[in-house]
Length: 293
Figure 1 (spheres, rainbow, N blue to C red):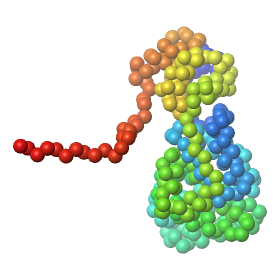
Figure 2: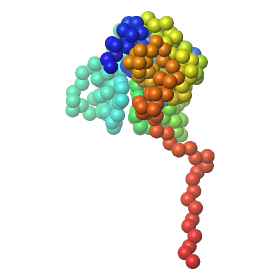
Figure 3: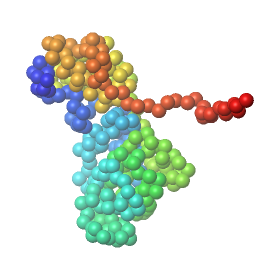
Figure 4: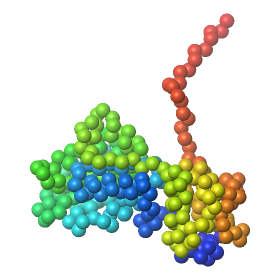
């Protein structure tokens, strides 16, 4: 069934639960509002380092896109996603994000000088540089330390360079390692975005439905409760389940998504649960085997 069929069936102007990050659909839950306020605080105060973390699919990238819409014209922004590599590779990522040309065969000193000259020029023109690094948990300890060293370009009371790091919970664990204590000390503001509870999930679903012209009551409370349980409150998974639910309901000629619809989705195997590591309350110790008698 095409998506248009359920759009016509429910009278929606567009898909309410697309998986692509879209600031137009941003739902300001309490947690998302706080996370965004931390990002804005970092921007307004020109904090050298701001960190926001959260599980996969909690809406971090959507918050970044919303932030980009509110930036000051004097802020020169570079957005980096999935940066990986060794020493020197980071500077190439940074220069590419800022659209700064540099020789392909340039060594580290040349790359750093090119970056420093660019930052100083922006500052001389009345602006400052902001680097936003998404999926920052992919950076290793050495790369994070290299990022910290970049902030040494800041001097006096003026901040010429700001860094905003966004990533999964592993990023926070990485920053808390002893060898990165100098990096952690420069983090001015940080926030961890938790999954949504049931009440917030219900408000989230209704928000997206009304945004596309729906009534907001196309899902029963029992169905939303089941969706919350299956998704554990992760917005991306909520979107996936809701989108499929609408397809199933429309194909059956139903005006409501009810518990039976969600149960059918589960029975048909359309909901894939993420793998979770087993929980050990203590360090597992293998028992020694008895010697053969």
